[in-house]
Image (tube, rainbow, N blue to C red; front, side, top):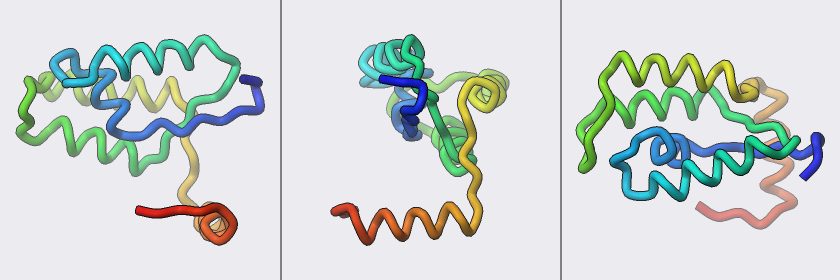
Length: 105
């Protein structure tokens, strides 16, 4: 990987990586740890941050962290990851990608 590589991190990866009781905790945690050793930049959107907060503040099959921890996590994520803007330009780029790259779901 190079410094030009951009990696988008999904909500599920963040949840599993940050909650020790989550089913795929070790896999997600190790994957993020490995990515952080590369020169690639790791990206989130504000939507992912909102989803993270929503998931970790509703009942789950696994034990959830305290609200203060979840809020601290959100601040940490915002500081440690690049944040992709949600603008009309981003939407236009998404639509171009979807026209040119096979997608589903």
